[in-house]
Length: 188
Image (cartoon, rainbow, N blue to C red; front, side):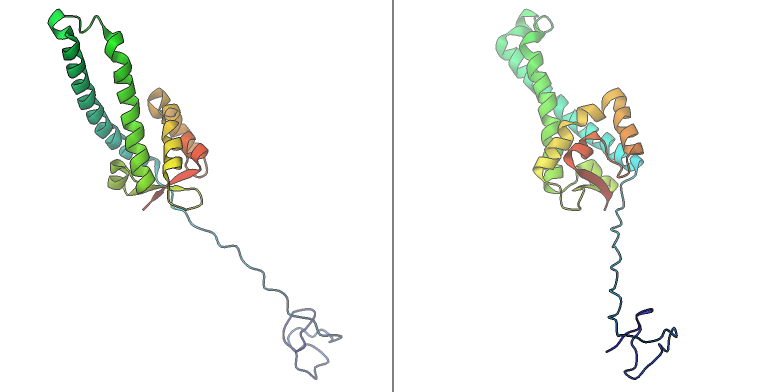
């Protein structure tokens, strides 16, 4: 079938002029290729307030667990060392302080990595209906969850102000951990 070289409309076989635009028919041209329109994926990023409330809920949960485990560890360790009986509990922090630090570091990393790596949501994020996903929309995995939470210490500087500023100024509402791990937090 012949097509108008000017407007791309289909021409009757005996046409001398295009019935649509009036261009003289000199030779048949194929219709203009359909230009694909890019599909924009709309991402509904989590609000800063949702993320802050989720972080507070998760911090309370982690704090309670760390406090209980650290207390149990201190009581059993100091009791085994006989430090309660000798009154050296406060005089020998070098014996138990490194273990407390380790407990205080490992529990949050395990909590966030496991929950975000399996479902993309911690308890706080579930309550706030937000979720961690990879920047391409794929589910968050253990590797991404571990990286983003290992860098949580940077985002939490100055009572979380670093993370709040970075989330506020980035296009995808990412904190430093999200940028490095290539993750985003979205509304569910």
